[in-house]
Structure formats: structure tokens, C-alpha cells
Amino acid sequence: MTLRHYANTVTEALDRADARHWTKQPPRSHRARIKFLRQHTQDDVQAFAALLTVPEHEILGLLDDCTPTETQAAAIEKAVLARWQPQVRHRAHRIITDNDGLMTVSFRAYFGFTAPCGTTDDPRLRFLTTSLRPPYPERLFAARHSFAPEQELHRLLGEALAVSYFHHRGAPHTLEAVALREIDYLEFLY
Image 1 (cartoon, rainbow, N blue to C red):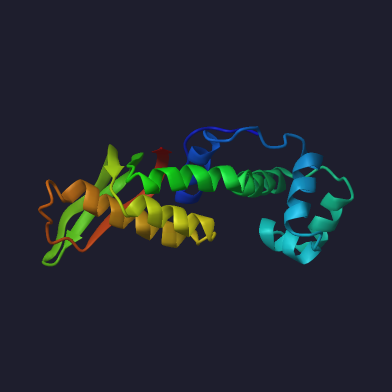
Image 2 (cartoon, rainbow, N blue to C red):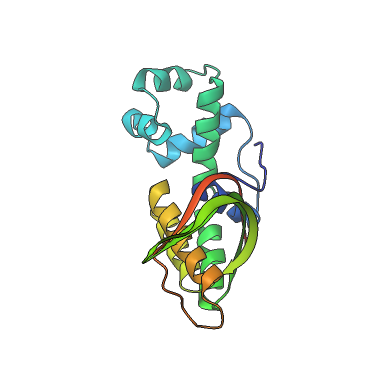
């Protein structure tokens, strides 16, 4: 796997952070990755195609030991990464949430916010590192465990950043939303 420790989506960033807790590495060859994913879909070709979001006829070629295209290989890698060692992943998440642990997030993106009376800060490119306070790590983990769509994870991260960045010493500000756009670097540490 071409495993780097940062991403540009919340889904991939959580998966990359979880990789630090793995007890063994995921399969490396295309054949082993496909075998692993077939086990997760119980050899259902339609489910396998849906998992990778590719047409069914392309899946049949992959199952016949054809070499995947670059796009297919990337989809296979992401699917394996998202499903590798779920018990280890859940255990790490449970330890963090049971101990009121913090999750650190670093990102470079266009970051701005809106308040009830209108926009108070136009989004601009910023590099920030902050800790996400409970209950947001638990909410992000729960959404990731249920394979929530990227938009839902992005919304949860925005809420967490609003609380973390703008609520100093428990004094909340009247804040409606945080705008986090065009993420080009995102990393979680826990």
C-alpha cells in the first residue's frame, strides 16, 4: 500500500490515523486485496461492484485475475484500508472515548466562519492544529464505523472545529457554522 499519513478527505484521514494502531499490515498484492474484499462481500459481485463504485463488468475482469487500472487499484486500496482490522480500530476508538481523550487535527484548507449577523470572516487558506473535545471524537468514530458519507463527516468536523477553535475557556460565542473548503492536507492524531 502507498500509505501516507495525511489526506484531503475526512474519511481517508480517519483511516490513515487508524493505520497507526494496526497490529499487522494489510495485503499488498492486487490478488490478496481482491481476495480480502471478496470475503467482506461474501463473493457477491454486485456488492463488490458497489463497494468499489465500478460497473459490474469491470469486477468480472478483476475476479478473472486481470490487472486493475490505476483508478480501480486506488478504489481497491481505499476499500481495503477502510475495512482492515475493524476490531483493532474499534478498540483504539473505545480507549480514546472511554478516557475522555482528545483527538488532534491538523489541516490546511480555506477556513472561515459565519455568525448570526452574517459572515464575519471570509474563508482564507490557513494551516491549523487544534484538539477536538468530547463528544466530537466519539461522533466522528461512530459516523466512520457506519460508513457515513463524506458530507456527514465533513459537517461533524466543522462542528468540532467551531467548538474547539471558538469556545475558549467554556465561553461560547454565537457561531452558526465553520466553512472548511478545499482541504489539501488533513491529519488526525490519536
